[in-house]
Length: 165
Image 1 (cartoon, rainbow, N blue to C red):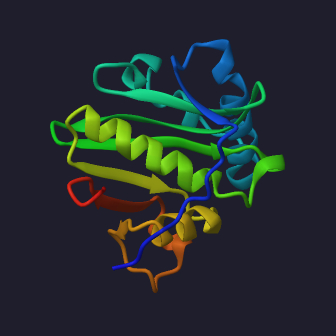
Image 2 (image 1 turned 180 degrees about the horizontal axis):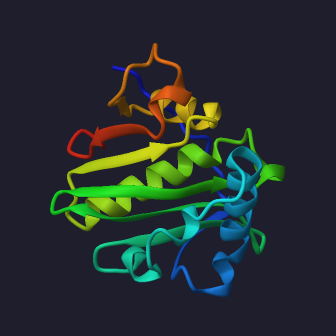
Image 3 (image 1 turned 90 degrees about the vertical axis):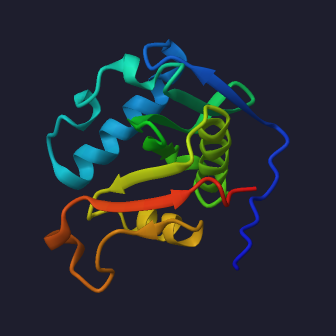
């Protein structure tokens, strides 16, 4: 069993906001820039209506440090027992601090509190840092890791929340 330590960031607050809240704008703009840089023009951020990330079945969490949004993520209902994590992001100027791992921990905690027992998520084939993040934090790949990611398309993962402390 691997234990993953998330470096404590006492100055980082977790905030729950609506996708339409102006405070979520840095996350959404950052994601749009990332997706466009890696995949060209796309419609990823418009695939789901904002209400899918709202309580009682969803959430959008932001990590805020000294008034600045530094990371965040969201989930929506995938099925009765499964939360689908989406919109996981860290600001370019705040990477390599363990914030993405912290986002996952917070999303897992929130999803578990909402009664979900499993997480499902996907990442794009041109996001090797996301692939590494999910593998290093206990997510099980639902695809052949030896395959060329470009031939797989969206790379799916799952994790049981029942095993999450």
